[in-house]
Length: 106
Image (cartoon, helix red, strand yellow):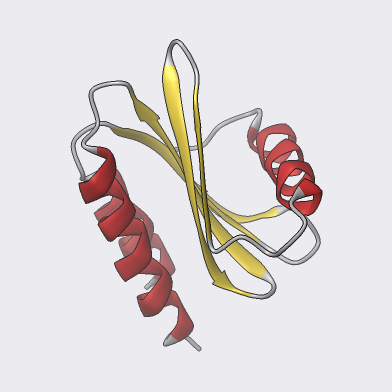
């Protein structure tokens, strides 16, 4: 079921990669496979820890990509890497919906 959820996020136009970050700052799942997944996730987890409060959502825009995250619960985060052409509002909605669906998974 989790794989299907990850694919649903990837099917959104502009989303290039998605990961579910676990409490140990490691990817629980990611799609498509990325040899740098652990590094990307560890860096994102570090940025998340820098915030004075626990952020529900974060976004970083670079010259080439947009990184979006949505907190699933206090221990897990959904992270998406998207192209500059992505509709940010729509991508945020997709991540928020997916985070709610992940909560229902066993």
